[in-house]
Length: 206
Image (cartoon, rainbow, N blue to C red; front, side, top):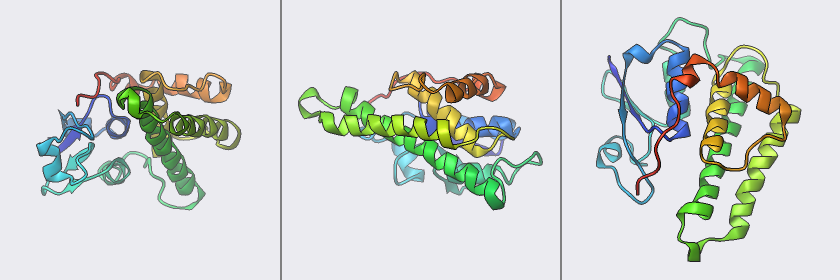
């Protein structure tokens, strides 16, 4: 093993990287180390390599620390001889990166929604803000259902979306059962060995 991955078993961003590594056959090269992080609890080991204090972080052979998940996935895609999951150019590249960005936004909105509904003290919760984040989730599902093709070879965008949707389910946030094409795709993608090997577990420890 020559790469170390700072990981968290309930982070959708970290899981995206690990699923990506499974898909391209790089897991044997990874030393996966679980690190609990939280916006209100400083993990000194993580802060030493990432000033944002977040996982995932990939420690390369030369000691360089890469973050966050889109950068790490780009790096890993250069280390294998299988078909690339980050298309190099043309429409396929932008479609994959756009889907990855949308999936990242789903995670971002879901985390903010969870803060307002569960983690912030009751007296400080602001319902209109929570409603706004929930609306982003629903609008994202709607957009994918009507405007994005999920067919074709697996890309980083598919991995990002699958891990984001599975995190939504894991955290019991507004789900996507009203969108049959998206639901069918998610159910099928979740059966991939890379997803089965990386199930979410645990809760944030403040």
